[in-house]
Length: 214
Image 1 (cartoon, rainbow, N blue to C red):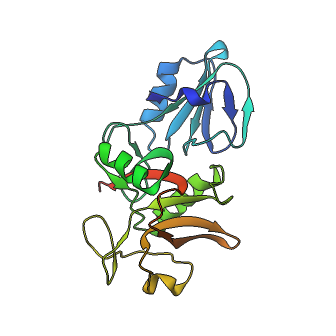
Image 2 (cartoon, rainbow, N blue to C red):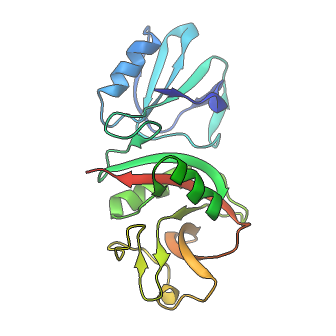
């Protein structure tokens, strides 16, 4: 388990998998570690209250102030250190915060991964659920950079393989302009879809690092 002190003294009430009372933090962590659906926990030492979550916290959206809570993220196990096993289609992921595209790629590279590969509908839904917990980016919408590059004829992953799963908003991806070189998941009025991103360096969005291990 890895502590995230950004969320100290805040209580989160969504995506609760189980609760336990009159327990200690080690038992709380153990109960999460043996449950594949548990991705994180909160513990309040003063009352021995343990909460297990089937998702992760990436912002203070939807939280309430309450002293004594500490948040822990389940990391390692099947995944490398600092990565959490999602339990969905072999995805290990890491929340990289809000960064520009290039800064996000560089950050993920330091962890030995790339931007999150969205290779299945299940992973798409998982990222959408994470973005629902995010704060809007610079454009007042929720969005995240994901893995995908234009090779002059096809959209490919970091290994040069053509993308098998996609969820494009429109057909503009078939003929990207000269300044378009990557992909984002973006919130539209009708839901979350893939859209093109330009080569501009100033745009800050959510960054999730990821790899497929199964």
